[in-house]
Length: 327
Ligand SMILES: [Zn+2]
Image (cartoon, rainbow, N blue to C red; front, side):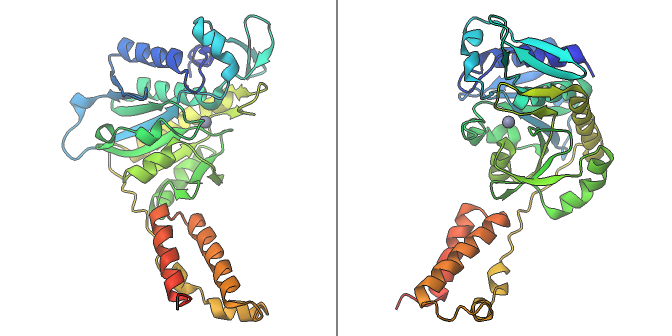
């Protein structure tokens, strides 16, 4: 792994709504490496490597990261085109403001992800990469992800979580991948030390998993204490993350992995509400209280199972009419 390249990437200041320095940096990388790129009206950047090698029926792997950070106190550095001072101590990287020498957030969230994506672009002959703006303020960039760019993508891997043992399975109620995809990759992930599957608030692949029909993944890439001045990066873990990316793409290849987003329609049928309530000794509940509780529980379960908003609406409607309270 090119450690100096990692440090250089981390030294570029960027904040939500002020991603121009990082955008320039990525475009410069693309030009230098003869990689096709485009920037959409929102400011997201899309890189495509190896289009001349692609044949019918092949799909690109796509790597993903976001180019904003939460560190709004870097605005002056961005405006003046200055760099953060990166310090290395015992394999740990931290950042300092070049003017006053105070520690400041290094922005490993998600500049570690940017570094991993760029390194993977150097490594592979065929690869797409998308770099989104304004992830930190509600995924505003990826909400406008370009469908044209993603139409020949077979799967997407984002690098945007702490540590080097973190796999997001569900992002704010959206399942990023199907069970059969999970079965396929579990062994490869485990060999790279990625065994911890978790439910997380959000990141860009949540938008991609909702908008498009390929399986997505989000992996830890070695940052800690994100969103704070104390944020730091563990070099060895960034390296593990990069290696994991290489192994996964080698293993999955240039194929399509359709995300079926299977919805367990029988979930509600399985629930025998009346008996549950009797078993808990709650017969005294009046009909409306009971119905309200059932709906709240059902909605929680549906979110847990990765239902999307439209399906939840539909099921709640079915549940209400099924309860016969509209007399
Ligand atoms: Zn992030």
